[in-house]
Image 1 (spheres, rainbow, N blue to C red):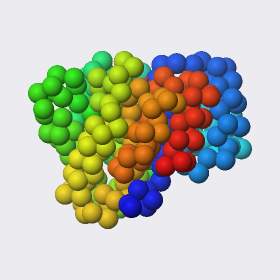
Image 2 (cartoon, protein in one colour):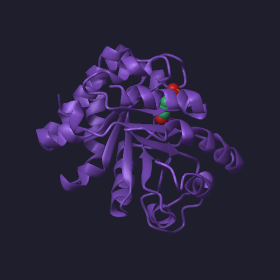
Image 3 (tube, rainbow, N blue to C red):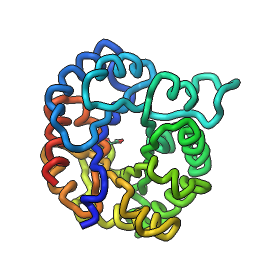
Image 4 (cartoon, rainbow, N blue to C red):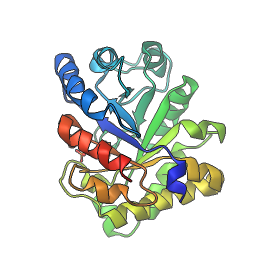
Length: 256
Ligand code: 13P
């Protein structure tokens, strides 16, 4: 089974939640619960919480990620944060192309590609998010949409750089809605993404790439989703804000 070749990764995406003091508190709750995890554990937190998060997880196995970065290194981009800045702080991961960035902040496949380029140039590992809207699933174009998002996002990314790419399949209709893709739906699309990577690179790279599912993953449904051959982890929103639920998902990843 190729699943064993890949690193299972459970990442929290805290979105616009938690102040610095709340960040410290939540990470101190999570750390003892996940200290024996075999899988990789990441918390992606708001920019203003990054330093607190790094400090709070210094002696733990929890890695810290940002939720976005700009494609330029510096300049007149009010309100943006560059990959250079994240790198200097000691941040190792960054989410790029989350559907909320695409929906509310004009993110496109091309800007996703540019941000990935900047992140990789600065030694960051990228969690690239792709996923279809409800209407697109209803029109039976999920495979086309997700394939196109993946191909454009990865334009110009070399074989060697693929070891720093994690992909999160996040059906937009399942995010924050309580609706979860069934385990079979998640498996089907994660496999489609893996086949796209095989066609762009080769089967070995496809087999080595961690592909997560995200969208209302919780302590109840994680085990079934993570049992699927091509679902290597999770990108967790709401449930990552509750230490016990997040830790239960980490346990589910370790059991699969
Ligand atoms: P929820 O788990 O809250 O549905 O969010 C998923 C998500 O968007 C993670 O990036």
